Structures are given as structure tokens and as C-alpha cells.
Image (tube, rainbow, N blue to C red):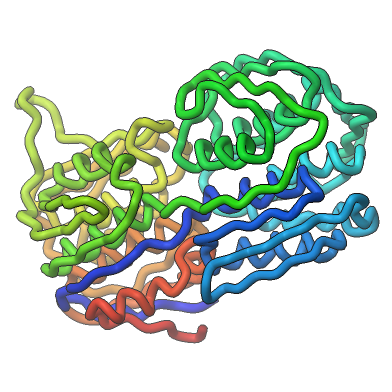
Length: 430
């Protein structure tokens, strides 16, 4: 694992564009497997998870042309995929779970080990995915491994989900798009990356109503066509560049076409003293007061709550925490999505941060901290590496973030981009 050496106290200035959304491109790649017609994706981020999907497709016999410099990925899957490669799922990344529906629809059988994991974000179960596939007619064998069989084209189904899971919603979309009849999912996730998958499936021939809402209605088709789709910009990266620019004392402009997704996100960062200006196609962080906006109810602690979209995204809580360590007021952070996802807060104490983990979901960061450089260790959570980096970049002196490799799973050229903006950051042992 590689480390990051961060020398803080230097302002970041300039203009930057975000990369394509990791959480959008991976389900879009899974959708491509539902067709044997050409599929072309643009704005594809150069990340290791994409590389693993590409390797898997090539093992299946697919034609793949990937120009990383331009972000263009062209795919064409064969009519019959190589059966000997099917079980070689890239299980070290969580999004591989979304390959289940396409592979079952193409091949009719799949077996794999249940130990699939990506980020260490608490307990993330595969049961909702298996339940959806079984509802659509897949048979689960009594085995130590997950052994699934789908004998024929599935019939449409109506499902009321226990909770609004992003990846389970995407599994539903993938199998329902090829089912016979009209399927309905109530309590669907509606994140921008889920919407991107919906739009791609519509382009391929599926009929989807309710995109962006909690109720999705999908009329499937016997076969899906090809598509040419653009991976949307990553709203996490937009917010991250703005946060880094603000806490460094600089002025950073992010050019993007997803500003319609950003109002609540910017409002929550503004609670932490970050100041923004918006213009068509761009948003600029212009300053940081360090003051936390107090609630009108004086007895309450200011808080940032993360929950399924359209709430503030859970994947942006670490970045907000990284900003809050330099604020003058106290803030409570509440993760309503993942249990135990803020245990890394113990590392913040090494920077001199005073904070209290109230329970597996809530963290209080106290204000007026006397920050100091430190060596901290990142867990295997992409956004936590970023949160620690935001903390370190506002501190005069050199800090070391151990085990920072997960950063490469979502943010291509991230360190290079920050260096071009004026940051003093380098990889150690890369």
C-alpha cells in the first residue's frame, strides 16, 4: 500500500474539471453485458475498478477498446460468453454484485463465493440482490457458495424494497429491463448514478417511468440494443475539489454540467463556512470563514445528516468532517446509511482534533481545535482518504496518510490535479 505525504498551508487556486462518476460507470458497464450490440461510453474515469471490469469482459470473449486518455470505452460482447470465465467475477469490488443479473440473463447459471467486498463501510449484505433475483425466478441452490440458476426469460414482478439500496435498485433495473411485462419497484434509490443507469437502459430499448423518484416502473424487452452514453461527472469530486480549495485558503473553480445536483450539497458545506459563487457551468469556492452556521433553536447542535438521495450523500460525510476539524463551532455528523462508517474518527485525534463518536452512526466534531501535522492511517474507504487529506492540507507542516491506495479506485490523477492547483502532495511507495 502507498502513502501520501501532504504538506499543508498552501493555497490551491485554478480551474479544474471533475472526472466521470465511479458509481455510475460501473453499473453502466454491467448494463452493456445485456446486449451483444456495440456500446460506447464517454467520460469514463481511469480507475482500477474499471480496469477490473474490462479484464473480466475480455475473459468472457468481449471486444474492448479503451482509450484512457480520451475517456472513451467501446464494448461489444459476444452472443455466447465463455462459460469457463463466468465465475471469475471481480469480487474485490462491491459493484461486481451487479454483474449477477446480466450474467444470469446471458448464461442462465452463476456460482461465486459470498466474500465480495470493496470499501469497509460497515455491514453491506448481498441478501437484497439475491432476493430480487429469486423474485424474478432465479433458483438458489443449497450450497456453501452462492449458486444461482435462471432457466428462462423472467416474468415481470412488483417489489417493495425494505430500504432504498442503490445497488439493489440497479440489480432490479438490470433484470427488469429484460423481463416479460411491466415490473415495479417501490422504495427505489434515486441517486444521480441510478438515474444514469436508467437513461442508458432507456437508450438500449427498455421503457422506464419514474426516473429520479422512489417508484420505478420498467417494461422489459426480449433483447436490448446498443448505446452511446456519457458517464456523468462525479458530484463527490465536485464537492471535494471545492472543499480542498476552500480550506487551503485558495480559490478553485470547478467546471461541470451537474450543478442541478449540487444545491443541498453546497448548502451543507456552506454551514461549515465555505463560500461559493455560481455561474452557468461552473462553481467557485471563494473563501472560508471557519464559522459554523448555528440553528435558530439555540439548544441544538448544528448537524449534517446523510441519508439516501435526495439527502446529503453519505459518501460526502468524510469530506465535510475534514472541513469541520478547522471550524470554530461544534458540528454533529449523522450517517443514516452505513453503520460503523465513522470509526476512523480516532485518527483525527492525531491531528489534534477533539471529537466524540456517540454511536455507530453519529460523530460530534468540536470546534477551535489546535491542529498539528501527524501520521494517520486510512481504512479501506475511498472517501475517508479524501477526508483525511482535507484535514491535512489545512495544517502547516508535513503529514503522512498511510494506506492511501483506495483513492485510485475513484479519483484518477487526483494528486496530479491537486499539484497543478498548487498543492504540495506526493505519493510515497507508489
